[in-house]
Length: 98
Image: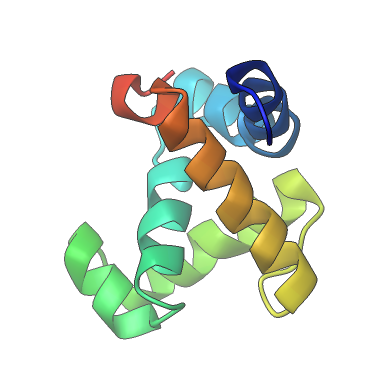
């Protein structure tokens, strides 16, 4: 994204569904995705960082795939999600949880 507005639009387009799901259900899919990707898709390290069982993280990532229409075994999809997460951070929304 070239501007803060473009960053917000990108983040909303790719992550908005996750944010609304988390808000409505009190879940942590967005944060789980963020940690999982920050730790280079390491199931064990991400589960440990999130203080959840590995199978809980597997379930969460399946829900992320279902809700976003992106696959975490696709380099292109992971790159899109990573860029959206970074754009979300750049706009300050990630820090606010909104």
